[in-house]
Amino acid sequence: MAPDTEIPTRSIEVCFTPKLINLFDYKDSIVVVIDVLRATSTICTALAYDAESITPVASIDDCLAYRNQGYLIAGERNGEMVDGFDMGNSPFQYINDKVIGRKIALTTTNGTQAIKAVEDAAMVVIGAFVNIDTLCRWLKNQDRNILCLCAGWKNKFNMEDSMLAGAIVHKLKNHFKIDCDSAITSEMLYMKGRHDLFAFLENSSHRRRLKRLHIESDIKYCLTPNQCNVIPIYQNGVITKLINTHI
Ligand code: MLT
Image 1 (cartoon, protein in one colour):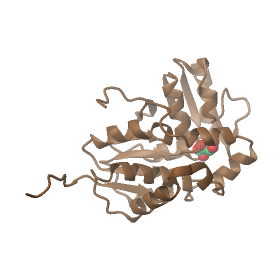
Image 2 (cartoon, protein in one colour; image 1 turned 45 degrees about the horizontal axis):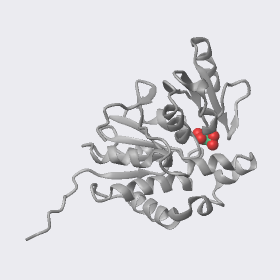
Image 3 (tube, protein in one colour; image 1 turned 180 degrees about the vertical axis):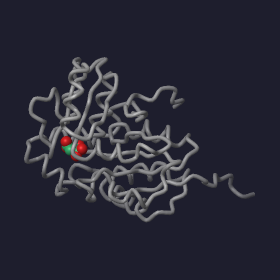
Image 4 (cartoon, helix red, strand yellow; image 1 turned 60 degrees about the horizontal axis):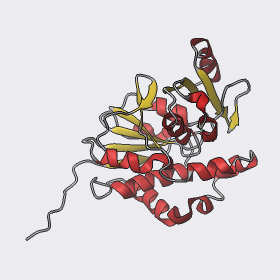
């Protein structure tokens, strides 16, 4: 008798940078936005530590405008905290009682822009190593195709986002069709580096950029899986914790 194997009908694809997003038909899909260093790791952390919501905004001026509405304002440019803001983009700044119950407006160089680039998708969720297993358990039970969108760096490819996309592909590949070379390649990259992501990424551009800013502890945190049991979801311009996840 033939083994009782599931024949996948849903697909999983990977888009290496926001610049390539128009090549993908994602409007009916779940898009997982990925900016491992550090925006999506920070968003997961803020919600895991009970911030009420994160509003991603494109510019520093747009972000400042939220201060008058009682928001904490947060963000970075090129990795450095914006002068005069309440917080930068280090996840450790959000492991703090001051975020509990607060609305936060966040602007970052790449991550928040990538989220806004796919706001017309059926669903947009936020992925990071820090929430990978919670996210994948939930994705496995959804009935839509998945597109992993890597934020990259200023529209260029980066290693850490592609490796997380590869980790997601690896965890879901028995349940999804993989008909996309970027998904296959990102999984290969992940398989090569997965036993020591920190060492594997040593020469990657953003690791070096953050090293120059003396924030290696942020990198170690962002590359450590499963520290936040949350699935952030972006709806109507705001990121909140997805509830009723049945996971
Ligand atoms: C980004 O959105 O480009 C970042 O998360 C950069 C950073 O703060 O490390």
